[in-house]
Image (tube, rainbow, N blue to C red; front, side):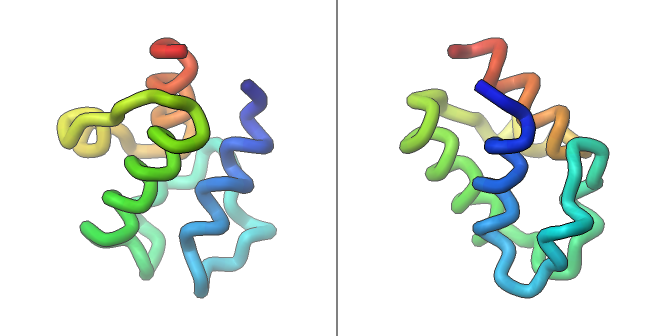
Length: 76
């Protein structure tokens, strides 16, 4: 599992975000599009792509894309 591929998959969920500026340290909650629909999309993508179930607490406790990556990686 590579960070850059994970970031790419996350960035695909954001239609209006400048994908070139998304990186591991990006605070995804600060993005204009962030909301409950995107959160559910992230959870679904992680389940589909990595067979890992993220919980609501995982999303609430994560601040950056790297935080999400670390959770997913620890559960593979």
